[in-house]
Image (cartoon, rainbow, N blue to C red; front, side, top):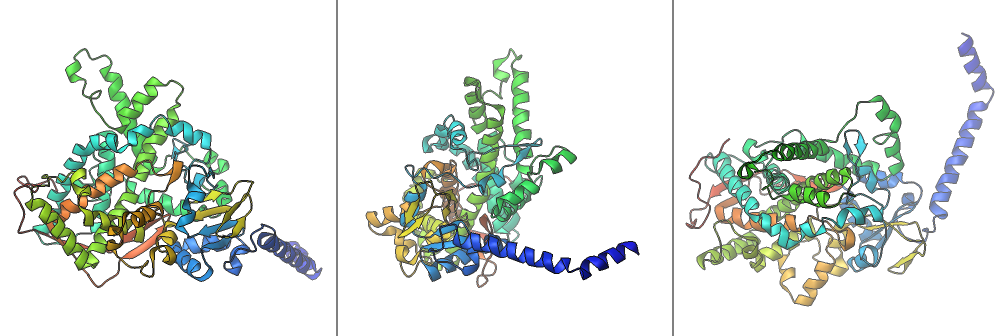
Amino acid sequence: MAGESQSFRIVNSGLVPILFIVGAVALIYVFYTNKYRQGLNHVPGPWAAGLSNLYRLGRVVVGRAHTHDIHLHRKYGTVVRIGPNAVSVSNPEAIQKIYGISANLPKSHFYPVNFPYSNGKLVQGIFATTDENVHRSMKKPIANLYSMTNVLAYEPLVDETIRLMVAQLNARFAIPRKPCVFSDWLQFYAFDVISYVTFSSRVGFMEKGEDIEGVMEGIWNRFKYFSIVGQMPWLDKFWDKSSLVHSLLPAKSSPIAAFAMSRTGKRIEELEKEKSAPDLENNRVKSKKDFLSSFLDVRAKKADIPEWYLQSWTISNMLAGSDTTAIYLRAIFYYLLRNPHSLRRVVEEIDTAEAESRLSPIITYKESTSLAYLDACIKEAGRIHPAVGLPLERVVPSTGLEIDGYYLPGGTIVGVNAWTAGHNLQFYGADAADWNPERWLGDSEQRSKMERGNLQFGTGHRSCLGKHIALVEMYKLVPQLLREFEIRLVHPDREWTLENFWVVRQTDMDVYFERRATLSKRAVQLDEKPSL
């Protein structure tokens, strides 16, 4: 009763109205400061965007930020304010000014939200670190490993994985005439390839036809957290990166970190055992040539490289090499299957090359890149459906930056969303929202201009290290499947489902496979039934 009486007296004393007024005044002051004292009030955009980062958060939570941002730029222009201190740019011509090597704009605090845990410790990544010195130190020893020349040394491993995929699709779906959840299988392929070239062993997604160890779902959940909390990075310090929370819980590892480090640990253990083996012929582990062996060689030659670099390199390979490649592959197949004229032209191009004996049983990367219309379709898919669906944030230096007539003061977060750049009407024309591979078959100057405006793999010194791995995966698989099978959508009139949480993931693109009647003897021979 005494407590109730005291509460009653507080309410009656008028303290609650006073607290309410003080809170309201404080909130108004924060909103006013955000909107008018950041030096961005001259930049057009939604009125609410200048008040609070809740606007940025809201547009991401619903999973449609890519289309939201396209509409914003159609309404307000190429430079749009999307937060109190954040600006989105849609003009591809501004890409070099923001991301070019000479621009030297550091990444924002959005990225460290994506740092994974390994045995309770945060692991910085080449992609996510905001420290340019750390990035340079991590990238320099391994950059040459990702050149196209070195990546093509792993082409036989990609060949084996493609051969397995063709066999699995034939046995599981073509022969029994069952629908295939194609969106899943393209990710199985991408993950098995990157695992094979990194660790010399596939995970087994395609053999089992399902997610293994919850790795794929773990990566997707990680992207959800990263994309949402990254809009207000300070929240991360009270949640995933809270030292108090982690002091009360057992040491944890992110699913992808646990996956990568278990395989790294196994390799190191095998190498230790082989040190005492006198029979060199039995030293099979030493003879393995994959990214992990190269990483270990680099570290053995440079004693000053810390152990966590090795963790970061392997984790980065797995993170960057699965989801984004799968998304690109889905886009290629979806738009081909939804546009019969393009599909027909690509298949005819493949068949012509086949008739002229220009294709190997497993089509090589070099052979595939000589197919001009296929190349145009792959580039168009990357333009119309980039993997990443949020701005690639950078921080304007103290000297400021001018973009399309708008001055952005130092400290402003600025970025280009590959979706808004790829759908820019002034740059690509009135049909920017439409599938049109022919745009890539024009004069070389226009093609070069469009390639410079492509952010599918980023650009500048922070561009995707694994770009060449992804390109080899795509340029080999797409023509191979179109050569082996007739593929059609189960529901050709139904749109697929898109969710944007950092990457724009696609589902609902189930297909039927039918082995092509005109298969050449040079195609993949399926003499053995694959393990199901």
